[in-house]
Image (cartoon, rainbow, N blue to C red; front, side):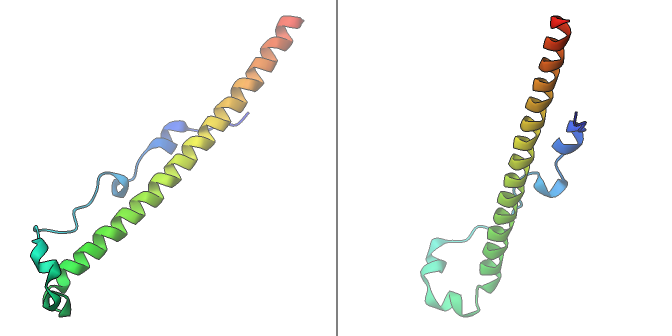
Length: 94
């Protein structure tokens, strides 16, 4: 039988909790359509957006990793339940 500490697998790291706010202040749509804004005047906002995208991508990767661990945990629990059922059937037949 496989012995896993399921509580340890379920603990989320601090960076997995919640969505980090990358942009500190709201930005108007008009600024995005202004060509000059992309020539260096508003690079801080664009960098903040890039940071937000990177943060969301990392959160997606972490969520997929957590889902994979959960699937593996289900497989292990199912395998253990099957082994216990076989043992129980063996004892009942005796």
